[in-house]
Length: 88
Image (cartoon, rainbow, N blue to C red; front, side, top):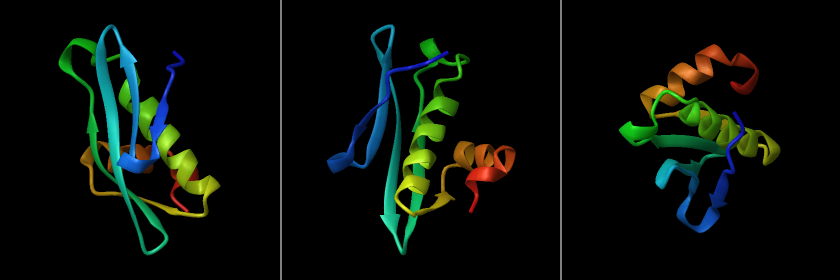
């Protein structure tokens, strides 16, 4: 499913709203890396691929800006292992 994902660059966050709930990814940039710190999807909207869509959008942004994807967040770390084309 496609979600409307918004990048709040000043907050270092990507987010989407589904059924009145907000799912989001928080990241930080350092040493030419983009590190996802947290991936949050509220329980009522879990299981719809929202976390995966948010992480993918965030790491796509990283690659487009020549930043190496990193993952302090355990979900993002597993996502990177499953999508090695993003782990540059």
